[in-house]
Amino acid sequence: MIPRYNRPKIEQIWSSNYKFKIWTEIECLIAEQLAKLKVIPLKAAKDIRKRARFDVDEINKIEKKTKHDVIAYINNVSVHIGESSKYFHHGVTSSDIIDTSFSIQLKKTAEIIKKQLITLINTLKKQSIKHKDHYMIGRSHGIHAEPITFGLKLSSFYFEFKRNLNRLEQAIKEISVCAISGPVGTYNSIDPSVEKFVAKKLGLNTEDISTQVIPRDRHAFFFSVLGIIASSVERLAIEIRHLQRTEIIEVEEYFDKNQKGSSAMPHKRNPVLSENLTGIARYIRSGVIPSLENIALWHERDISHSSVERILAPDITIALDFALNRLDNIIKNLVVYPKNMEKNLNLLGGLDKSQDLLLSLTKKGVSRQKAYSIIQKCAMASWNNKNNFEEILLKNKEFRKYISENELKKIMIKNNKIEKIAWIFKNKVK
Image (cartoon, rainbow, N blue to C red; front, top):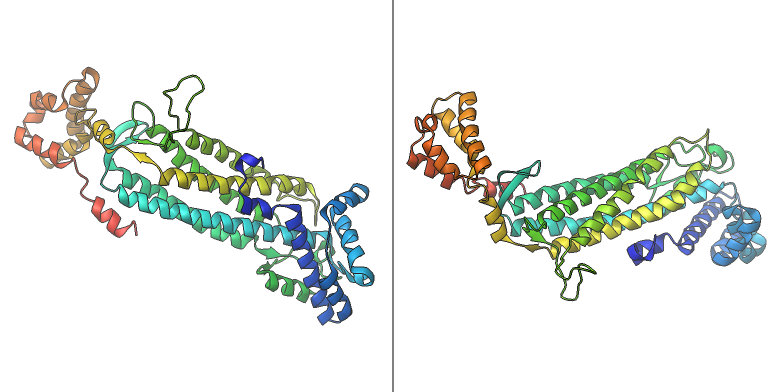
């Protein structure tokens, strides 16, 4: 990942040094269990634990010759272990180390993402409650519909990200697996108790049947969940972008006093952070298809998945961590304009009350089809000619047969409030 989007904690997990530390811990644990089984001498296990260390630069040099990263690692570590190195990497295959390590890296990055997700969820809840009574027009198809509140709008995202948290927790379980089963997964050269021992020590579950690699449907599920989270990030980012449009300006990203919006136009205050999140979300979702394609490997294994994962896993997890942190900061510092919300709410002079008027007619015994026709005719006359909706209704003879002027005024005033808002927040936004 380019430095612009890196955050240190998650980036460090994908470093070569950290990866080889995990490999070394796995190898040490394997040796310790093999010693308990008397497969290798106890002294060898102690030597491996005490002396196993590596040099990343040296490993890279060796790999240029061997064309095999695990062998390069084994050769480098073996130099430091000495005589007991003949028992290092005993009875296991490369994928046992690589895949188990990959599980740990994914799990650790996912825990960071989970923590950031929880922070965002809490921010959304706080802001939704804060703005629960800030009325605004609801929009469907981008067109004025009926009133909602900004807090209700935010609560939708609050629950969406809570669902994402549940999905992520399930995805963490999916990828938190250890496979130490030897070539083609038969345990022919390694006792199954080794896998169980290593898994317990590393906080992982054992794979059901690993072939020679951990099946990639687990990883596909994980990256699919990250793609869904990214789409949720984009949905909220797009909402902010729309509401910040000049004609609407109901909310706005915080604009620092030293910030510049345009190299040419000094007046500009653009929603650049939300736009950035839209772009990052596209990139994160791009990792879903390759992860799905990685499921289909040849027989017990091939390495067609390897190059994809080396690029995709660090970049996608780092990008999502960055995106969630940025979105949280946007929501925390979001500038809200209730007066503009009220102005836009009244922009069409009461057309948003069309359903209430429709229902009022049906309560008077008018068929729904006829009531709809009466209200739509008046609404279109107001929409097309910018005339006062209430005045048009009062002049409509069909409408006045059923609704008096006083009744109309009561309908128009009464429905400026949403009666169930308090109930929604009391019973749902907990």
